[in-house]
Image (tube, rainbow, N blue to C red):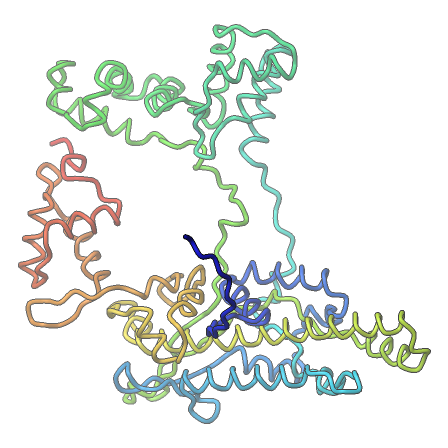
Amino acid sequence: MIRQSQSVRQSQTLQQRLSPQQIQYIKLLQLPTLQLEQRIKQEIEANPVLELDDDSTLDPDVSADDADTDKDAESDFDVHGDTGSEVESTGGEGTSPEDSEKDSDAGSESAEDTIEVDDNRDIDWDAYFKDDDNDYVPAYRSDQDDWKDMPKPYKSGLMERLEQQIELLNLDERQRKLAAEIIGSIDPDGYLRRELDAIIDSVAFSEGFVITNKEAEVVLHQIQRLEPPGIAARNLRECLLVQLEVMDSRRAARDLAVEILEKAWPFFKKKHYDKIRRKLNVTEEQLREANQVIMMLDPKPGESEEYLNPDQFIIPDFEVYYEEAIDPSDADEGDFVIRMHQQNMPKIRISRHYKQMWDAVANGKRGNSDEETRQFIREKMDSARWFIDSIQQRRNTLMAVMKTIVALQEEFFRTGKGIRPMILKDVADRVGMDISTISRVVNGKYVQTSYGVFELKYFFTEGVETESGESVSNREIKNILLELVKNEDKMNPLSDQALAAALSQKGFPIARRTISKYREQLNIPVARMRRGIG
């Protein structure tokens, strides 16, 4: 006999959940500068309590309040001794990244405390408008004032220029419709990977025109010879042949280059030059000249455009440079300077209009509509304050992480060389944050240095131990590997095993499999594909 019973049990479990404010801070933390600007504009549109400051475009005569903000956004500090020392600000008392994080947390907590509503359901308006200290004010640099408002020059895109050239061809209405469909099917690198039959079917379905394959090939043939030549090619061989066809026929070795691509393409793409010489019965010198002609061609005509998508532009989040000491004898007295680039960031504040609206409602009848209005204002006020506090906390976190990276990679920021092994945990331990937070900070953020623009992730590398027991960044190993490949004999390129032996002679015992992994990460082809013509 089966007994069935029901019972009720009570249990306690401990779960950690992020508050909406913490989630908002995390999302803002991982945004780069350009996306943060868009996010601020979206918040202004969504929350009527937030508004743009009338002085969003700052004048060269920076006010006292703006000067104070610049001090927050710009930090000069010294790093003395080993890289394990604290980062200190030259503008006041020395503070470590850990202290900065504690201050940030304390500021966030105090801000949240001011948001709390008292029992009388009033809002502490003084906390919102106290000296306007909590307004988000971007850093300002006067040397950028001349160009930041200049209009960007118009540049026509590749598709637009192709359409203009199509108008000059002798095509009827049916062929023009087909040409437009072909142009719209071109990939960003300039190739046409869509089947021609599918393009013909698409035109027939949308326009009602019946076009034969032969006629479509004629139209495609004309498009491929527009500027840039080789556009809309269906494969690399066709792309190169089109470019050779439109090339000046009097150019030396041009005819042999065409013959190589037409008759010996399988050998050429595998760099089997000896087989090409035997098949075409040409000398080594003739083959070298023809190969030089082919190497001058553009394998991806769609990517050779000067026009760039705005998303491809990099706006550095930081600028770091080293100021030498005034006295050359005091080599250790120089200063590192860190600036956050936020010159185009909107300046926002909480609208005082809603304070007046609150007072008007408070003095009126306390009906349901008035209570709903007060509730609406209170919610929007809280949301605005949380948003501004999250941006401020984001700024403090980014500055703390950037200071720590500079402290740990002091030699690189001084000389442009000598990346030390560093992992996310090294930074997380120093600033007192979680590794996932550090990962969000460095992802998609860039720093401008005297030696170029680098993504923050560039400075995080694993260590490789040398024969002497010293730990060296694997990025340094990759630089040595690049140098070895650059200086190798192109007739007898070094194999992975030979590269491993060469690195071992320099004191870096690296396995062949590791060399192969580094070579692939550096986009270096195998030895056979690096072989040249004697």
